Image: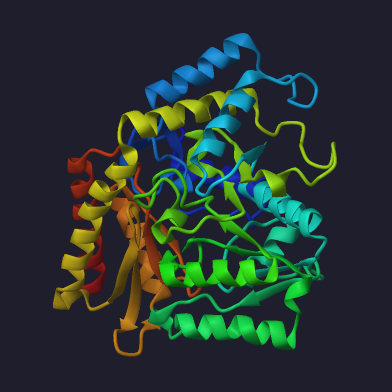
Length: 429
């Protein structure tokens, strides 16, 4: 019989150890908000394949669209023989991107590819080399995107030298002592001490810092950043890879601040489980690269484009943007109730938007000292009891919640029952 233990042994013998595994639980099948492992055990999914499955596992409409596309053709390459699903998806996303004026969309395979291309387009469009990102950011693991990522361990260890003209400024994080004023002052200092704004092509920011701890950017800060960019002719790239497509209670998280970026990077939930990413931006920016300067053999694969079109239909037809607040409201309510109990003084903060939520675990609420050990143990204990959750945070002490937006409310409550029981067991041991 195939078991999780036997598969883990095979994995360790065949796969590089640098490929992280959240839990050694090997999936056999999945449906909507549930996963069954190779041993037949069922898990409630609060991870969604790292925010990929806003429409749940194997949504019937998404699966049908992908299968119908396969009946026509699997791959022809959009640069050899263009196809309608690519164009139709671009039209849909162009119409959905916040802000006035015509838009253009380029499709790729992964989030990191989207970020790479957004930076390349920004450099071509402005004729400037420098990019400014934020501490704690995660933009990918390729050489350029890991340079943009604002966390050294484990992403940057041993890969220097990194690409030049990449700068970081503090992310506004009041819980850890960085105010909006501090972050804005740091940008001013950057321009005075390290790089003149006339050399900067773009700022790139996640409207909710993802891997760094699920910290929403204050709307007033995003509006101030937009003003800084406008003043200096700098482009604003919004990394919506994890936040996009209803996750935060808006189709795109930038809408919470009523800020229109110059470009957005998208991926994850766009494909409903099929690999696709994109750069969506103002036509006046996106049209700068010469013919042949952007693209890729598999970018905007026909099956992924067909699936993505179905995903957009499902989000609209099933009201999943509003549904994010319903599911998120259940989880937030339970987390805040837990935090109010004396036995759960380890919960330092509950935060997030919509169904993109987190709790930060600490050893002491006054000092806010991180408890990474408890965080890791909680993820393992929850999995043991039948709930899949992910951890994150610059200090490794944040539990993040990314349920499918199609999750039944009763299942969300059941998942929170498991989480509370797991944490209670750990703190009273």
